[in-house]
Length: 133
Image 1 (cartoon, one colour):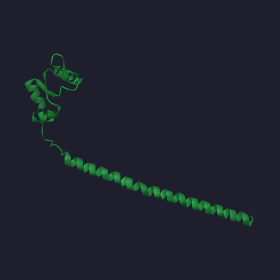
Image 2 (cartoon, helix red, strand yellow):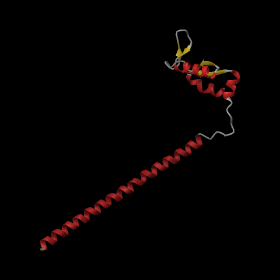
Image 3 (tube, rainbow, N blue to C red):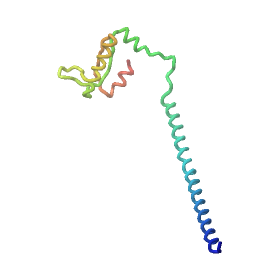
Image 4 (cartoon, rainbow, N blue to C red):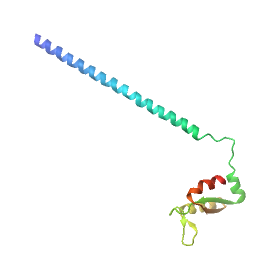
């Protein structure tokens, strides 16, 4: 090998070495930049879990719901709806509550062998009505 060949090989080796170092630095930068994202996601999940635990306390396992017993005893399934959302619930030409929801409620009552009673309430007050029962 001539001196020129050796010089060319040295230059190629230096270029390859520098390129390898640059690739290594890029990989390290990518690895470093992923950690803040991962830590951020973990922090958001932890904060969300704490908020859920605070806002939605667990209901006591001993608390029993006797709604079904009351329905069976009275023989009437009472349902509150807001009859101003056609086709789900609305007043028909005979001024009776009609639509998909009342039909479903009626069918459920028929299958259970009990009467169904549908009462119209303003949408804004439905939550209060249901809580008072």
